[in-house]
Amino acid sequence: MLKGKNVLIVEDDPVFRTMLVGFLKSQGCFVREAEDGLIGLRSLKDEIPDLLLCDLSMPVMTGMEFVEEVALQYPMTPVIVISGTGNMTDVAQALRLGVKDFLIKPIDNIMTLKSSIVSVLKMQDSARQNQQDFSQRWLMDGDDAGLVEEELQWHISELKTNPQAARELLMGLMPDLQSRCGRWKLSYRALQAADISPVIFDYIWLIDGQLAFYMVDTSSGGENSTATALLIRACFNDFLRQQGNYLSSVQHLVAQIELGLQYSGYATPVKGLFGVFNLAEKQLHLIDAGLGGKLQVGEQCAMIAAGQWLGDQACNNPLVILPMSDAGGRLSLSNINHANFSVNFETVV
Image (cartoon, rainbow, N blue to C red; front, side, top):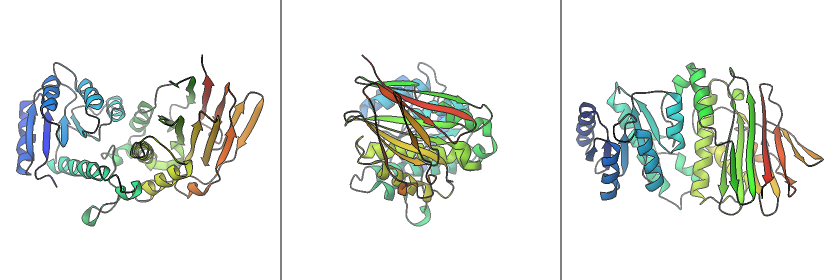
């Protein structure tokens, strides 16, 4: 799997860098080195590698600045961060920038690195097969049967035993509080208990005049809630990327995410709600997966009944289509006792 792969290592520690180079060459890789992020960017202009390994703590420009530049200029290049810090804020920021895995120094077993590289490269190869259905890309053959996650392939057991770190990671992955597309603005409000796994939210503005979003109550998923939430996030973002930021239906999205959960081997059913706001038609398409809620539009209020949980055939729950006024509306969640969560859709001039 690694033979003939082109790998760029951006690492300022010469001893650790030499160790990485030696191991990867022994696996048949072509390896290039850069001692800081600026040299790394110059090297990327010369040739784009199959994989990039980098540190976060580096001179000239920080590793996070380097990763951000790579995400902007070379978004299809997979990145694995190997860092001396396991700070959840750093992990969350790196994942938001599209990093495929985050490994902690020192690496006690070099085979951990190999396993991560192989998994990331397999996902990358599968993603290039545009004719392949998304759900099939999560399945591997032979010894690799099961799910290979696109994001955060490490420390599932650690996240189980450290709920505070898990919560910090989930909160760090929350998107900006406000976002705008044309004359429409999205904002959300979250008041959450500090000692309970949170309600998480994510959204993407689509190129065809729609807004896709979801909310998941991670406290409903037990000890595997954080890993499940990370998998949902990866499925949601990856599916929409592979669809060219176009979504045919909410049912299709939920069905594909449930396939990912089914084949993961660790994901657990959770409460969620998935939706698409069609800006042109001013309609909200919703599938409730256990949360329930209400849409307030002016003086009108529409209740949304809680359906089967995500992971329990939520894709078969009824599709609810609700009208939105020119002024917008507020979508609020129910069936959560530890949080107050709402999303506002409004027009701006």
